[in-house]
Image (cartoon, rainbow, N blue to C red; front, side, top):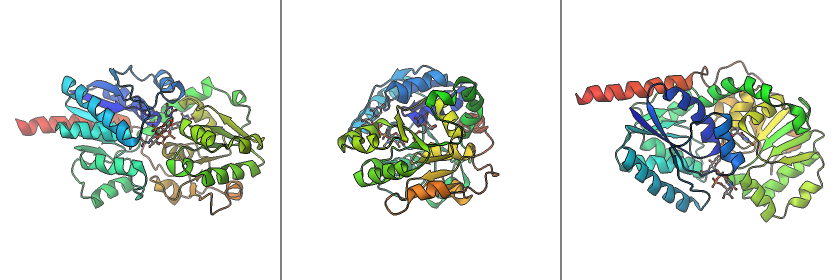
Length: 363
Ligand code: UD1
Ligand code: UDP
């Protein structure tokens, strides 16, 4: 059994690590790194820290407009699939790397496996929403992480070979938290436990609006606590473009740092007083760490964290973000919203089962 995995962004590398570890017990995995993320602190360090196997193919795609980036990946992934002739292609999440892998596989009639299927924001202005919908509709085997995601697929008449299994990011957190606490210490970041706010911002809907970014930074500047902001390169470029450096210079409590490694991030999340983010993965990690989360978006795909009262959506232009950060009290962390930490193991077994069933049908 040969599975060809396509990944290439930071959150995908976090997901590849636990799945790859399990999958390789049962199947031969060919890892294709698209190189959508390429800075050392957005990609290389994740391979190293998480012991992700060396990619069999490094496509080195890099940044470009959506069409160009996706198109170039599609062309190169097709060549790799033709050369490797895998039993299936495996993709994660909703990035342009996901869509390129999905299109390449489906055009060659190679079964497609989608991990993190069925998530919807119902906002088609997000490039990710288009990527998810298209990928789900050409997938042969789908792994929604939650009941809501499975229900979303049902609403779109995707009912065959849908297996709800939990979220592989929870597996990653369970596996790595103790390692993170052993390896890194808060003093290295100049902050003290439960006395700082951890923030990440990278979604186009925030970075592409100077008004929103200004409102977010003005709210941060009002806080008594330190705000630690590992800055995504997209946001860094936008701040430069908008000439917003002055705003940061004037706010002594905001500490902008380079993107941190996954293990550093787990430590920073766990010890934060609150987390402010527009990241999908970070919303879930805040829940796992039992840290209050404010999400700077009008909607979320991880609705369960909001439903249980541990995550709150905030519009920085309409609401007083600083006050909400001070006042928000999370409700209930008792529910296992994202499985039991064995999603990767179960997914690997389901993949093997699926192909045994297929083979039996052919005979
Ligand atoms: C992508 C995903 C998004 C995901 C995010 C995770 C798509 C459409 N978006 O967004 O769903 O949440 O990754 O972080 O696939 N850049 C660098 N160095 C890098 C990578 C990016 O400088 O290593 C800069 C470039 O200026 C680039 C910009 O960041 O143009 C955006 O990168 P890109 O991969 O296109 O999208 P992300 O915003 O990272
Ligand atoms: N992350 C990290 N370093 C950072 C910021 C995020 O390791 O400086 C991790 C984070 O812990 C999570 C993943 O990257 O596991 C989330 O990726 P990102 O926010 O880029 O994308 P999204 O989840 O929104 O697609």
